[in-house]
Each structure stands twice: as C-alpha cells, then as structure tokens.
Image (cartoon, helix red, strand yellow):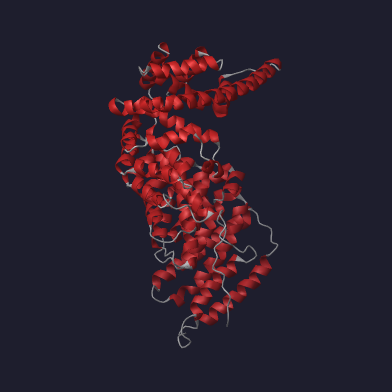
Length: 559
C-alpha cells in the first residue's frame, strides 16, 4: 500500500507553507499509519496494520456521517466528556502495556479523532468555560507532559492549543478567553511547553513544526495578556530562547520566531530584562549580531531576525545593570565597527548606542565611547545623513534624532579629558559642526512651528464646538509635537546651550552670530529648553527630576 503523507503542521500565525485543503485528521492518522507500514514485512505479530487500516476507513465514514451536525453547548459537552473518557483509557493501557504499542494503538487513534473534533470549539470562545469546568484543560496539559513526544496526541494538543489561543478568537469573547488563559497558566502551560521543546529534535521536520507551533501558543497568550511575560520567562522560556538563538544551526523560521518572542518578552518589562542579563543574554545578543558587522543579512527574513535582536538589545539597555554588562561585553566596540563598516546593521547600531549612553546611567559608556575613538565615527554622521541609510528605509529624522541624542548624552556625561576632546570637535575646521548644528536647529524649528500652527487651529475648533481641552488632550498634542520634530529640536537646543556654556568663547559667539543672521532668537531657545525641563524625568525619581531641571535652568541663565 502506498500512502502519501503530508508532514506540514497546522495553523501557526506565521504560515509554514501549509496546505489548507488537507484534512488534518487524515494527515495525523496517515503519519501514524506510515510509521507502522515502515516496519519490515515479516514483523506484524499483532495484526496492527490491518486494524489501523480498518480504523482509518471507519474514521472517514464517521466523518461523513457527522458532517452537517449542528454544534451547540450540549454537543460540546458531549465531545469533551468523550475526550476525557478516551484520554483516560489511553493512559490506562499505556501504563498497563508500556512495551507493547499494538495494545494501545487503537486508543491512540480514538484519542486523535476526538482531539481533531475539538477544533470546532475554537470557533466558539464563549464556550471555553466548558473546557475548564469539565477538566479538559487539565487533561490536555497532562498529554503535553507525556514522556513520549512521538505519540499522536502530543502533536494534536499543541495544534489544538494554538487554535484555541488564536488572538482573533480570544478577542471575540474576552470572558471565555480569560477563563481559558487562567486555567492554562494555573497548569504551568509555559513550563510544560518548554520541557517539550527541549525534547524535540528540530532535524526532523515534523518536530521542527511542533516547536514553531509551540512558540505560536506563547505569542498568542502574550499578546492577549502581556503581564504573563514575566512568569513565562521565569518558567524556563527565556533560557530556552537564548539557547536556541545561539545554537550553531543554519538560519530557519524557528530562529526568526525565537527572536520575535524574545523581543516581545523584553518589551516594557524590567524583570525579564534583568533575567536576560543574569543569563548572560547580553553576550548572546552581541555574538549573534556580530555576524552582521561585515555581512548583510542574506534574506528579508534574516534581516527581520537581525532587527528583532537589535530591538531586544535596546530593550535590555533600558535597565542600568545591563549597561555595565554591555560595556564589559565590548558592545560599544561592536556598534562602533558596525557604523564604520556601512552595512545594513549600522542604522540599528546607532539606535543601540543611543540607548546605551542616554541618562546618568550611560556615563561609563560615554567615556568609553570617546576612548575607542567613537567621536571620529559619530561626527561624520552628524554632518551628513548617509544616502545608504535612506535606502535602508530610515528617514532623516530618525537618523538625526539618534545622532543628536548621542552627542547630547556625551555633553551631559563627559568629564575632564574626554569632555575637552568632545568640545574641540566643535571648533575644528572653522566651527563647521556649529554651522551644521544651527542648520538643523532652523530646519526643525520650522517643522515644529508648522505643527504648532495646525494644533492651535484644532484647539480653536474644539473650543468653538464647546469641547473641553483636558490634560489627556494636552498630552496627546504634546506627543504630536514631539513626533513632528520637537524632540530633535530640544536635543539641538540642549547642545547649543551646553557648548555655549563650555567656556570656549569661539563657540558661544558662533551660535549667537548665526542666530542673529537667520533671524533666530535666544528667547525661543530658552522657551524650548524650559518646556523640555518641565517634561523631563518621566519614570525617574523626583530627586533626579529636580536636580536635572536645576542643571538645565542654570545653563540657560548663562546662555
């Protein structure tokens, strides 16, 4: 008997060339049947083949009979109870005859059938509570913790859980979704999924698909309930992701997906950032990114993975403890080399440097950056936005924002010799860098003035309509102004005020000379800096906020 077997797995959000026309039940049963048919012809003591063939034919007939039957709460209850019964029977026979698969193979197929039928529940999230009330979630998790990953039911469970947790389905019934997710987390679903992924051999395509679909379950749950990321990371997921990302195997869809899940876990979460640091994750990220120092990603997918890893690194650097790990892991040297090599990675390398040097926690990194001759790399990028960066999809504003932020961080943090080296850069070549600074100042001032004009018009219309301009609306308008270029303008004004207070008269004179020539105003710069000072320190301590505001106001006094 010749049997065509489709090994593709069903339904992850990021499709892996699935054939939607194939009936998943026949795929699964076909796989099991083929495995038994691969035995030597002489071996068939229990008549397994015949029984499985008959079973497969019966299943097709049953499926035809059931087609068109209405599915309601009553039929779902019946389905779940049937699943419970078959799961128990299979477990009982497996314990009784552990070394004789032929004795429990039929119950395996029965269990497979009912799990396939349960996919219909994924279309009715309002009935998810039945899965919990009738203990089905507990039983499904029990099948996940099974010692043998080669059984049909293990793969079916991953498949079913993935479909049940599909984000679009979860959002259809929040109440049903909450009950299901609560029950899964109570049963430590992430720990079980991680244990299973550790046992899977990704050299086998079917098992690689199993890993992929397992990651889809994690993504679905994290998207629905971002708060579970901390718990998931601590249940072994973070450690497994780092291990998988640094595994010396060719790039594939699973590595891409791992990088995506890692970036999700680290988003706005200091607990997971700290955990990654403790697991030497900063070194893992730097090692993986070092590949792109002299080589561009080979495909769009590999480029996406590279960006995910850069995003993960930027997230980690929001935590002060990771700045030190980044410094010790020679992250600054790697980013500096990426900027010089002019490959695709340099846009993101600039962003990483910005995250690593910003604020008082970035002081050590700022000093080291000057020591490794980073100023020679950053100032050419300040003088001109490279065309290659534009081609890579980076707009001028994003590039100029990161470069100005790095220079502003250096001016804020550098002391002694390193500060002198930075200020001397502004006096080089007849103060050409001050000229560029003022050019950018007027460019962004114009953009912000246009945005302000539009916003004032909107405010006027709102007042006319009798709408109230509350704090929420004012915050929204401020964010729009920042996005229009106010943030870059604030950075540029900060640099102007810092270099004017440097004690180098040549710099202060040049700044005021260009302001007068172009009809600029010291008052405007002061107003921008005062507004910046008022909004500074978001997420920082009150003490930091007050000291930083005083520092900026002192700088303004002498401007």
